[in-house]
Image 1 (tube, rainbow, N blue to C red):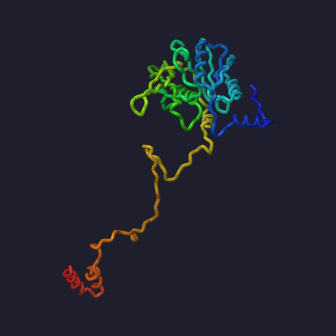
Image 2 (tube, rainbow, N blue to C red):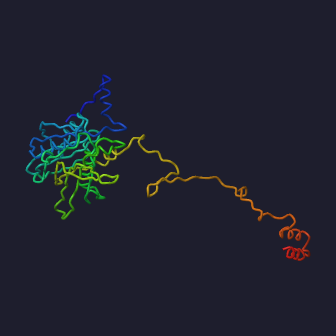
Image 3 (cartoon, rainbow, N blue to C red):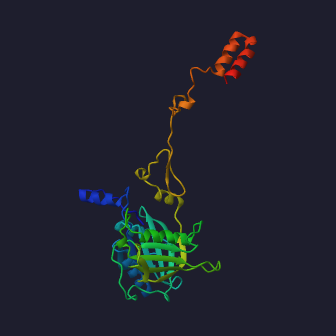
Length: 329
């Protein structure tokens, strides 16, 4: 397939559009594309509709079917990504070998970064419409929670990849502060414990509404009410990111690094600790408290003065000087 030709801007409007698609210090929010294969089951159509509803407004859904095999030739997906300025994609396909299959794809610089394949369990799937209750407003950031030892594995596997993809997909735009009133729903992902090496544990997706009620104290009582969708996934194939491309995608611009402050550290508790360097102190000039009892009387001759004079006079006078000191004391 021929590469896309480079477009040179002829107007200021075209230049602004291309600059917006290019690399930026603060990247735009991630947009997700939803596509279908030539054969797509009714179950997958319902799943795509519900996932698109959770992702709005950062979502684009196409109804036309496409003859694309992501793991064999992903070049067509890269064209979709560049044309729509999307960095995430959900591709639905159905076959006898891989029934009710969703392929989650991430892009970097409009090239496929990594992919994970999740197969929907049709028996336990429930849609948004099957839960007869209120739904969260469009455009709100959800709370994301993950439970299961497979998600926290120190070695990279299909479950750590799925967790990373879900975080990028549902976290929404970057914000500094979030209003508590805007936290209306939560998306929870859980994975079963591995019982045998032949059978991979399933991933469960649940979505809950957050209900706050009076509790008689300053903190409200929070209750969870399932609002849908309810989806269970079997883990399929994966494509890990190329090390060089992953390193390039994780690189931060020079202006993004936090400036380190000298002699300022944070301890284990989280308190900020500073170190101050002082010059050499002359303790001889240190002002102390004056007391009459510590003053030396002028009439009393000190023992040190008497001994010093005795040494000058000679050894014969030393014994006499010592006697004088004893008598004076």
